[in-house]
Amino acid sequence: MHLLSKILPRLYLRKLTLCLYNISSKTIMHSDHQTFVTAIHSTKKLKLTFFSKQDGGELIRMCAPMDFGPSRRAKDNSDRYHFWDYESDTRNHVLSLLPGQITQIQSTEESFDPSDFITWDLKQSPWFLQRNWGVFS
Image (tube, rainbow, N blue to C red):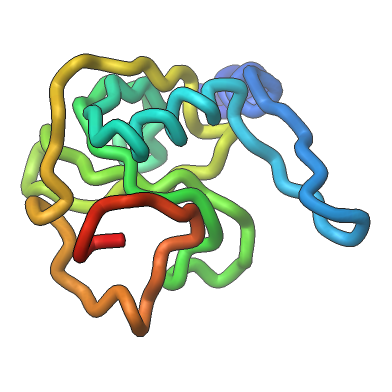
C-alpha cells in the first residue's frame, strides 16, 4: 500500500472546523485557528506541525503567522494559512498550507517583527485578516 494512502485519510480528517462566514460562502478552518489569529495580533511566533508534501512527512517549524485566505499564487481559491518559515532547510520563505495539512498550531512567547518578512506593497496586496502592525497593517 502506498504511504500517502495511509497518511492522507488521517491527516485530512483531523482538527478541521467548518465555519460559515455568510449564507453563500463556507470556509474550512483548523481547530487551532484562534491560536493563529491571536498570534497575529500579539506578534508572537508559532510552533507549527504540518504535513510537508515535498518531504513526504510531518515537520515542525518555528513560524510567524502572516494571513489566512486564498493564495495569490495557487490555481484554486481555497483558503490557506500563510506562515513565515524561520527554520526552512534552504532559505526562509512563506509556507502556504491548506487546513488539512496542519497537524497543530501552538503559541509561543517569542515575538516576531513583521519587517523581517514584509517586502511587498500592502496597498496592492493587502491582508485578508485585519491587524494593527503599524505601517505593515
